[in-house]
Amino acid sequence: QALRAQATDLCRGRVLEVGVGTGLNLPLYDPGRCESLTAVDLSPGMLREARPAAAALAPRLAVDLQLMDAEEDEPPPDPLLSSPLLSSPL
Image (cartoon, rainbow, N blue to C red):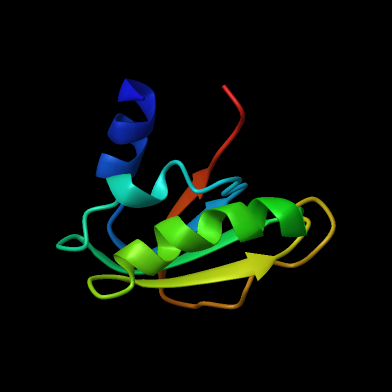
């Protein structure tokens, strides 16, 4: 948990989280520093699990959950992307 908090604390502006999984990182993002968050995962089941955490952030931070295989697909186009975060199961 401490490593996740350190990683999300570095994020600013428009954030792309690759491998959002069940959304464990989502409550750790600071809406005061993050303008928007696009979170992608290759598993529809994981995105379903992440929806409640994304909804809890929604009043304070725009969260866009997207189905995507980061190894195969192009990332969502965002010329103003500030902070990419690659999540990995720890």
